[in-house]
Length: 290
Ligand SMILES: [Zn+2]
Image (cartoon, rainbow, N blue to C red; front, side, top):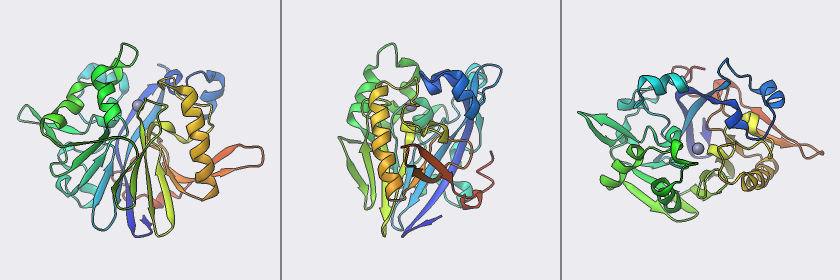
């Protein structure tokens, strides 16, 4: 999709499932199951939607997805259905992994950093060989020092090889990654979780990452049970959604299984609503199987 001077594409890296209760926190199942029905194991269907921002001079990939380094038990637990090959994540767009200049990872949970590295001859190497990977300093620190409550969401093999190969660019706070593409710290989900804000020729957009993972999470109090700071998430959502509605930003959801981009509106009662763009705006049906 053309966006000012930028070209935007969604790469659906995988479909997977997580526990519905964990995805909706304190929201009662009687409410969330109406908008996001669960399976017999109480799991809801999700996707990993990567966003490629081609600014004309640089190609910036937002997130890396789950990757394929999962054993049978884990694959079954999350019902991971991989949709792209780690050797050539961008093949359906006619690009190679080596075409990516920058990778922005919102936080280092396994469904965001799992695809950052891939196995070659038994060794882990960066999936995108020319790219700098942009990670918040506080998030990298947390990933190394997380306590028992958060430890199940991190795997050191997702990010340690990036450190060892010297491809991580540690950023500390809001940062312009390339002209017009910004990492902005939100906190909430983790202490240094970041979203990606982008603008070109007056058009503005945001990739919300795990602050708003699906369209069903648009209501500010509907925050995930996974969030380390749920009250903060609620306020962050209100603030960003208010701006997004007022200025008609493009919003992108990382785990939405339907069409993951569109616009938000705010009615007179203060309720946010999401209007997805037509499915035809997605760049490739081959990648974007739902
Ligand atoms: Zn997360």
